[in-house]
Length: 141
Image 1: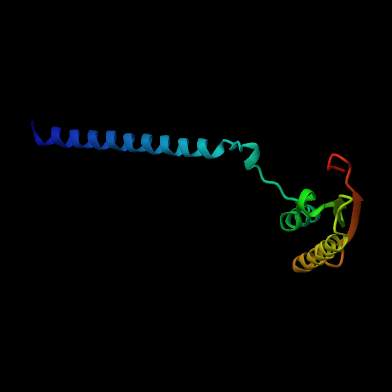
Image 2: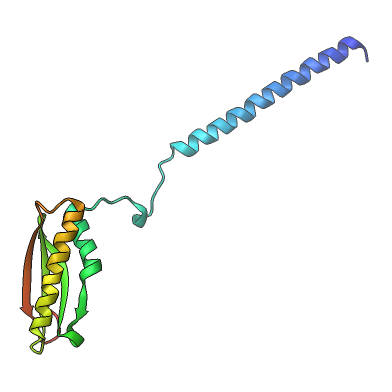
């Protein structure tokens, strides 16, 4: 083997190495582009959802105020919204209810609603309404 044939082999190996490196780099870039170009499918529970302010407020209030003690305390209390600006305190009570205790709970709920609205800076538009009714025989209304 002479020096010129070794030089030619070295040049050939460099050319093959260069083509190999370019093809590996091209394959990597293609895979990267393809992977990022595919839309990601989210499961229904992972899809973003932005609640309205009244939805957020009633959910927060429901978590802190809900009282389902119709059998033990004689009434239950929860919060909903009737329109985009009104929080409704729903109360269903049994004939044996301690009215004083129930009224204290309703007053406390009203204060919590007003305080929570103030914390969010929404006190100017949030209205509070009460829906107090005798519970039906089956305990539901």
